[in-house]
Image (tube, rainbow, N blue to C red; front, top):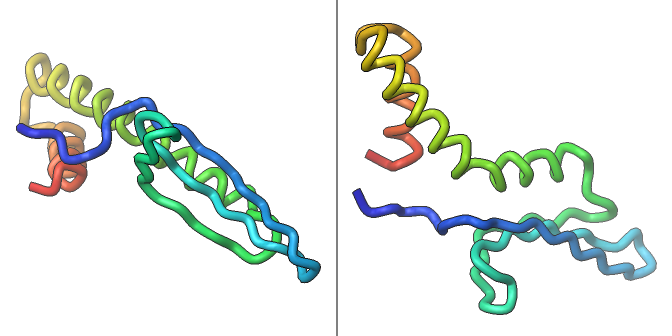
Length: 101
């Protein structure tokens, strides 16, 4: 299957602009390298970004690694314990969603 997501490494950058009204903060997620401008996602908030905003972007930053780990674990459990386990099914459903199939 052809990968549909930007390959790693991904990086998170935070840009803050002060405008006298509290400013804005933009969280930007990049793939490959920033110099080539491979933008993945961004979010701009008024004022400082919250810890939750940063945590959401960190989760997105680690998504490709989490997907690969889930694939490995699901395949291992299916091969050793059986494909009919609820855990294996949940893993297969999550993988299918991530890969848009």
